[in-house]
Length: 218
Image (cartoon, rainbow, N blue to C red):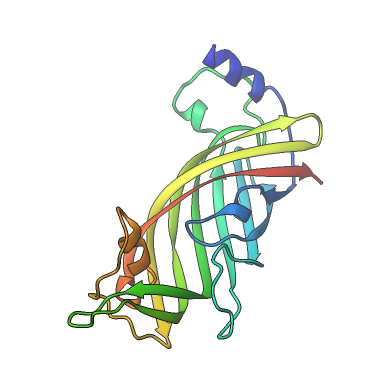
């Protein structure tokens, strides 16, 4: 059944270029919500070049905006290879341009800024404290992953992808009073996620991506 499905989808010879919108980036709670557009163009047999860019125009956090308004942007470029099934000798027919299973390598750069409010406690201070600070984030790295593109009709394409890789994160704080080792109330991962807004969390980390794009053949 799986091979039959793959064979059917690979028979759809869908050639680009494609203009896409990222349907899941607008609700991204792990980096920042952004409106992203991308362009994919075939390059030689079974290869394509894919570029994407987007900007942040709102924030889920309801914080004091007297310092700055939330703002951010992201760019990435990737190379895709659609011949992976043939390379692995998995049965499929008519390995077409921009359709079916693909693997990719992606370079990315992101930066954003926002205000955040942190509730915390200091040793020997009986009352709870509150700090409103500005957070600047900049990160860049590489992702490696797998995806699947399926034509819907003659002009529309759905692109599902997921990947993982290393990234370097740089965090800068201004107007800050809270210390990294101060007690932050909360259960589970809440204190950890709050500390990820502080400059001490800068360094080499893992990047995880997943999403859905919808494209239109130009």
